[in-house]
Length: 257
Image (cartoon, rainbow, N blue to C red; front, side, top):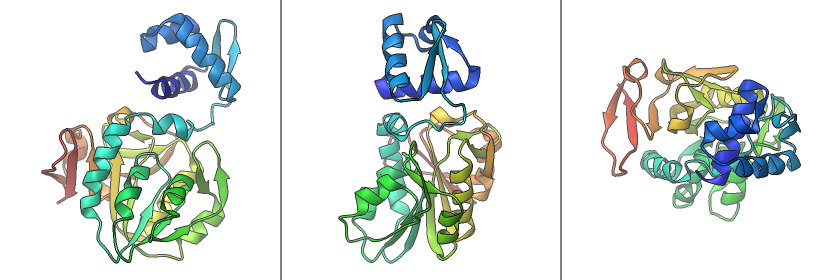
């Protein structure tokens, strides 16, 4: 397990249990006690956890999992998903992208298109496209530092000025029944605006998010047009879709019937 993935899992565990001992964390992650202690020291220095009584608790249960941790998790799978997503891109289109670590891998494919307009609330996506010929719009609004995303009323108002041909987005959780949810209220509100003002919706999700439910409801997979995953969708969620072939092994592309 990579260090960034381990850090993310520790934060998730602490947010779920509110407190976990070093022994509990080591058992859950199958790592040594010294490794857990080093991880907790680092996470405490970053302000994400508080050490207490031989274990740790989250510094703030509402704190989002930091983007640098999410970016290092399943990066190979996310890159492959974006290669598949790129087959849906066309020149001369207006594209919405959210600030997720998954969708950020799409930037290199957007750079290759002619006469494309990208509207994003993602700071990382904006930085990646800043030197490209892409016509780039960034929402502005309040910067959510842990996720490198802009959100809030100003960001949502900015999105309402556009009509996009296609939207690419991810989220923190996908239930077995197909509900798409997230732990960030601001990013959920922003994605809802993007859904409202775009024609085609592409949801991208890795297997770490399956079977989870977060606080804020966004939509269901049945309300999207394409779903791209690194796992087969449960039968309860895949009913409205047909599975299309891809050139990427282990990646599934579902199209709304």
